[in-house]
Length: 138
View 1 (cartoon, helix red, strand yellow):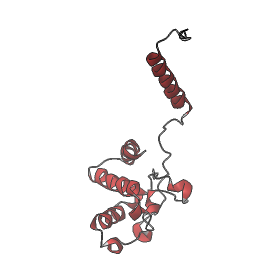
View 2: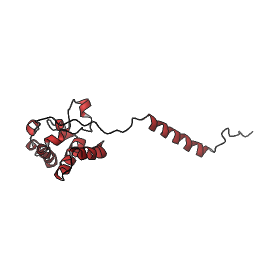
View 3: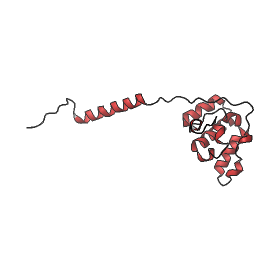
View 4: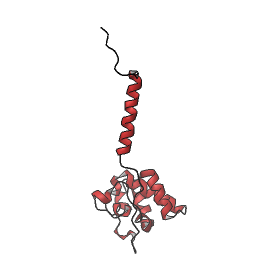
């Protein structure tokens, strides 16, 4: 005796509906993507505590970003680092990443800092730079 299909919906359609419901459920439970909380730049911040670009002479691209950060420390100090080092390493801002080798080992730090420098040269405000970094790396 042939078994009767207990579901009134054809199996391929049922599979698609279950997959869609699972996706919707996962999306509803996933944390929402919100803009990062950027720190306020500290008064009197300077490039004095940064690693010197010459330290990275064997990698000119990294040395270049360290040099760029040294030119705009007050801007970089007002940026949240989207590698979340504030949480796992106690960093105050993206500038903190370049006070050590951390920035040299992290593509998010390097990319964010280079984007900040490029936008600053174009005359972007700190808020515009924050938004661009959040859109690309957040």
